[in-house]
Structures are given as C-alpha cells and as structure tokens.
Image (cartoon, rainbow, N blue to C red):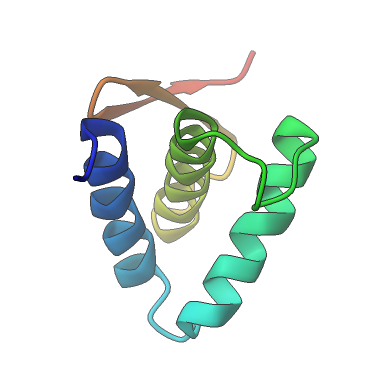
Length: 88
C-alpha cells in the first residue's frame, strides 16, 4: 500500500520530471540522490520518505524559479503547496 507521503512524493516527482524534460529518469534519480545527501547527509537508500519529499519540493522550487528567471527565491513547503519568499 502506498502511504500518503509516498503518493505525494510520486506526484511531485512527476512535476519535477515535467519541469526538466531533457533529463532522463535515471539522471533525475541520481541528481535527487546527490541533493538528498547534500540536504540530509543520508544517501538515497537511507533517506526517509518525508526527507525525500522535502528534497523533491526544494528541487521543484529551484526548477520553477529558474523557469521564471527568479533564482533569488527560496521555496518553502506547506502541505502540498509550494510558496516562495524573497531572500533578504
């Protein structure tokens, strides 16, 4: 059975994939593994679902900001919504 966190992570993964259509799925997994290690200190094998979800939201925020030319924004996760706030 898929948990709500896993279902949400799969939804955000699909969004991240759509935001980076030139990236193969294996490349995306590898990239998420590097981001996960950087943000949590844990490799992709050991990362918790909630931590991976946070990594996915962070990466999605980066991709959205890049697409909108607003790389000086920091993404914030609130439930299933992503908010952005200007860095001070």
